[in-house]
Length: 71
Image (cartoon, rainbow, N blue to C red):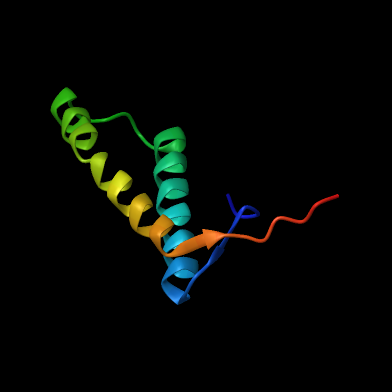
């Protein structure tokens, strides 16, 4: 994705870095963190996952397809 697109503006660059940072923090928190306290907290976190889809759409709208170089 990084090679296939380029930022249209500053938001396209910073939002992608922010999204990647958030996703990496969640990943490492789930790998190295304690188990969830209850099944309800897992369900609540699962219900909020649609926010990442909206954030990814926003990032993608601030990026454009990069120039394709033929071999």
